[in-house]
Image (cartoon, rainbow, N blue to C red; front, side, top):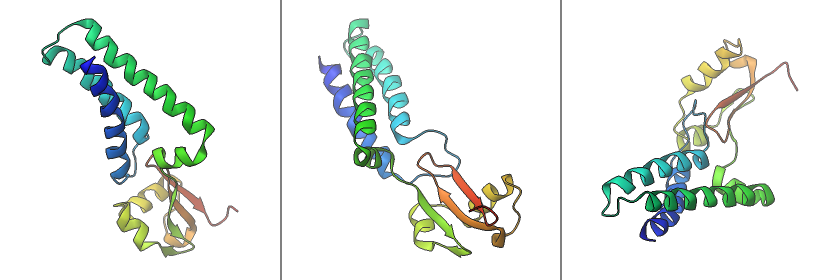
Length: 148
């Protein structure tokens, strides 16, 4: 039972911690998915490193995290504001030739990161970019000036 409680509180603690940390460009998973991966791995280690080495203890912790994951997924689909709290929202980094310096600083993104994302779209110059947006998953979306 102790492992189930640790899993419950650990899930929300890690979700909060990962959400508070700034996103970095190039990340492919949301903070929500990171929590699931880290916590399940940690619980499995806990089952072998803690005083209770039983498989039932391990399974109980993993099932608790899985149920929490499904519950949070459901809440994210049903309540968009909850999803914004858990996953964050997109952040504009570049808007019509103007760097959004506060957003760049807050998100720990360098102008070079944005330009690297632009090059993957075949754009070489700043004046070719209408918007650069840091997405919820950490990726940078580039909208060229020729698109509306």
